Amino acid sequence: SQQGEEDPQALSIQEGENATMNCSYKTSINNLQWYRQNSGRGLVHLILIRSNEREKHSGRLRVTLDTSKKSSSLLITASRAADTASYFCATAAQAGTALIFGKGTTLSVSS
Amino acid sequence: GAGVSQTPSNKVTEKGKYVELRCDPISGHTALYWYRQSLGQGPEFLIYFQGTGAADDSGLPNDRFFAVRPEGSVSTLKIQRTERGDSAVYLCASSLSTTDTQYFGPGTRLTVL
Image (tube, chains in turn yellow, brown):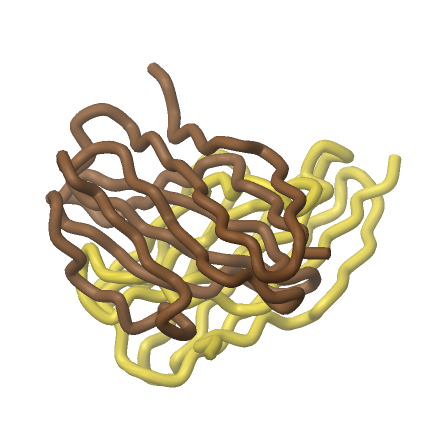
């Protein structure tokens, strides 16, 4: 079963625009992670945010976490064509345990 | 350094056959995870190892699926009497026991005809 729900399911933007993806989950978590996947193969880890954190930044990525609403958002600023991929949020109930993934958001960035 | 590797990258088999999928984790990573991903879905957890022992196998769909990690490094996922519904990409990930970041391999695409 899947814990998270990403929203929107698909997003199309122009290069240079910002992309925002949202993730909601159902049960309490230790941490939430965002991954990127190209062409349905290996996942690339983007960022991890712990349950006691509210916001983290990494380069052009900004992640927020609202545990009271059980939701997270991923913002990609100044998007590039190379950002075209599927993005997944994944939650861990406890540190080091299995990740529960959502269905993902498919992002298309056109030049 | 070398990342997680998985072999084979693609496996085509016939219904009823036995298959083995291999995962080589990042050197020094004590935790190893197996997931599978069907088309259009996110990965679903199967089993995870801490060292040689299975810490959580609650995601294995039935007793046709089995995984081992005898020396605490390489792991093999074994599927008996394959069914068409087993067709998916099987992903392996590893992590240091003291951190939470899981690093994924490229996956094995299993097709059961």
